[in-house]
Length: 431
Image (cartoon, rainbow, N blue to C red; front, side, top):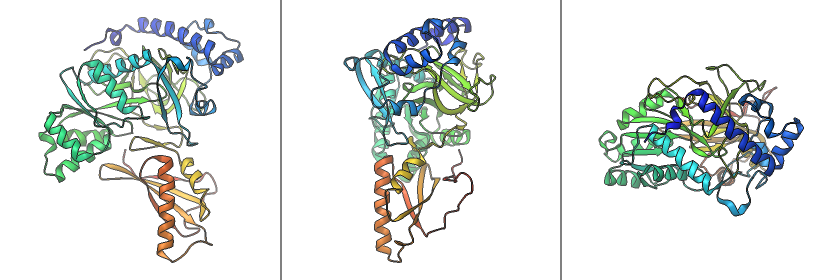
């Protein structure tokens, strides 16, 4: 399946983007107080947008904006038109909320179908979807795309590795969708069950929701005997399906007829030159329920507008994610902020406000260890007392993060102090 819009000449694409930018800007001006105020503060109206460059005059939207207007303040349609609501974690414990109209779900289905097709997937494939279903957009995004493509979808969701492998063999799965780390873990689990991953019917892995390296890609491709493709998305924009690699694996094609990308210097806010690293900023051109102008993804990428030498698509291509401009970690597909953990620890009388997060990769899966100092008044040699405290801290943190963590209690004044910004995170992953 090929979409003509993926092969538009640059001038034709820019014209389409400008028309859609004007339309979505007017929609937001009329329906969302935040954007109406942003335009008014600049002495602008959406009708004043005469080129794509005019977009750069508008302020950035970010997670903090969404938290300020939590839960429904950024909605631009009445609730009667909303068909689906999703959310992702933030630093305060409140999710950033996004909504979908019926047409938004059609757009989401289309861009995900295009993404699957871009990797070589077709209506003849059997797609085993091991992304989580629920508020996390990964599972349903792939699901909708597979239905739009006409492929068979196996809605496994995450976990249940033994059953994943059983059904993969029984159903003759050809495409696996999950996080890169889970694909490696699943392969190792298969080998522990005397199943050779190379001998399955898999041919494609569509992997995302966490950063991964080319070295990890080679390892995944070798152990499964497949081609592994990077897919990019975030719930604030639409979910998975914003960008994906083609079979040439020369960067991720961003579906620029729906998502207008900019790459800017995060310090100055000015655009960087083509091919230079900067922060990816995306404007949603066709979203109805929660469109955003100039959403700051915090992801560091470079971008090229050159026609793809592998597939001939003319859509812009972004690099793999090279880093973040904030302190957010991505652990097994879940956004984790140190401040979330700090807020939990500050409520526990027995601990000091000195902690460190150690991220490692045990086998194929990421592990997060929280090291925290125990208050001298409560520090005890009684193992049972410390074990009970460790379990309580672990439970409180897991309730907030929704992922498993390890907790290590340490003696007072043993975590290194800093005269400047505290070094809260030690990331030992090679990604």
